[in-house]
Length: 380
Picture: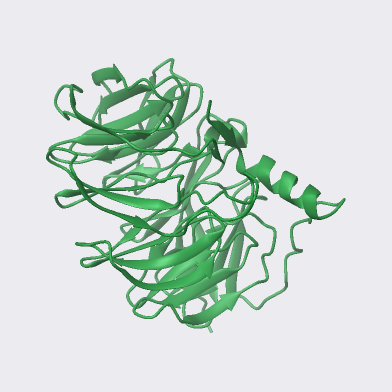
């Protein structure tokens, strides 16, 4: 049977192997604020243990913000003012999502249930079971809803009815991190990061394989040292894909062929985000990197947040934003990585990557705190 290790448990285990003491989060460094961060609105949704919220995120269709709680409630809030649009109690143990698109909000359960709701009013559209736990947001496209399960199946379903369109199996190692890479629909292609350290591209129409690329292969003589999960967010451009895996590499791949264009040694489980000329990665030690998109050469590195379990770094206006295990949001300058602002949403960890929608930054904590922020230059 496949075993899953929660990231928090893994961190403790690896630290125990290296030392009798677990490395504490780096103290907050002093800085001179360069921008003003203003909270536009906040709301409260159901909370859960951090392990149970690994796959639960905030998502948007440009009008509303949607999120969920592990106890089964799904929420919709107006993007601009945070007014609650609707709440639905599904009675599921929600473990992933929501995925949003085509007027639908789709959540996945730890028992394999996939549920689609109407984005306008929360009414159930369909419900099905994919016979495998879901730990990452489903991808919602015009012709298919695609989901990856922990038992090694990528499944496409009809957006109209939830009927299965096709299913593809893939090999999964005996031991992996608890989590999964969110499935991506890009044009006529499905992209899925795998626990084997590979990136799989399928044809959306029928699930046939287009290519399979190894980001990095397992090495070492025990299961822990051979963990190479590609669990993080993929950054997909017009022609290129950027990915990073645990105990592996950050890479640029050609979208059409999967050909490796450049690689750089790095370990991360949160993924890659994309800006105009750079990509952004938070490594497993807590350093934030800005890398040139065309070469992988670092533009800057910010190491001040070591051991703070950072989220995916997200570009927002002239900053790059990361959340941490103590509920802080750190705003870094895009130009040199210096800290320009910091706010605290709450005392609970921020695991889900912040999202940027119509000029607002939306953040969710494991304690169920949801908030939207905006950034403005400080008056001189």
